[in-house]
Amino acid sequence: MIDKSAEEYAMAHTTEDSSLVKALIRASEEELEYTDMLSGRLVGRLLAMLIKVSGARRVLEVGTFTGYSALTMAEALPDDGILFTCEYNERYEELARKFFEQSEQSSKINLLMGKALDTIPTISGSFDFIFLDADKINYPQYYDLLLPRLVPGGLMLIDNVLWGGAVTDPQTDKAHAIDRMNKQIADDDAVEQVLATVRDGVVLIRKK
Ligand SMILES: C[S@@+](CC[C@H](N)C(=O)[O-])C[C@H]1O[C@@H](n2cnc3c(N)ncnc32)[C@H](O)[C@@H]1O
Image 1 (cartoon, rainbow, N blue to C red):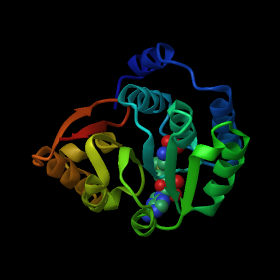
Image 2 (cartoon, protein in one colour; image 1 turned 120 degrees about the vertical axis):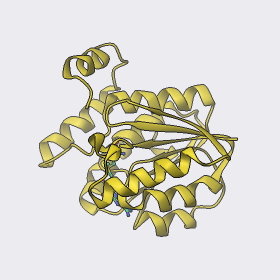
Image 3 (cartoon, rainbow, N blue to C red; image 1 turned 90 degrees about the horizontal axis):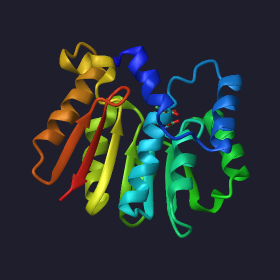
């Protein structure tokens, strides 16, 4: 959606990933046919920045894939921070665990396997920061499930909310679901939010 040269310029002027995170990206590209699900450095560095400036300690991620954003967020967390990340695909799990184990942040990361709508309720306590990046068709359901789990003043970042521009005239079930959630957030008096045109669109939500 974003002009290619502007995107490249943004990438060239954004902090690099750690060497372990770069190795994870390379391994994902070598072992998998498609890695377009990986959120990428603009979103990854935004996540790290938000965690640092907000002082978040308890983080939940929905949608691990091979662990790019999980590892990036774990690196941004303080030593006593904890990250729960939900995935259901065992092939992605294997790659993610391999890199989590190599990381100095491994003790902070809890990978929960299974359908996220089932595994999230098994985690007790509330979260300072949530990153939603899983099955788009269930985005409205996730929003309803996750907002009550956020502390007042807590932040939620949701990825792919522009869905390549398809939300402006939704024609598919996924585009309709994302559009429905975007409208739900915009109408929700319990939050303030900014829908930013970073990569495929992210909405940053702060619970009042
Ligand atoms: C867009 S990818 C996540 C990318 C990751 N956050 C990153 O930046 O590298 C979405 C992931 O969610 C997983 N997923 C989809 N539906 C799920 C579900 N219902 N429960 C758990 N994981 C799910 C997919 O297998 C996929 O790995």
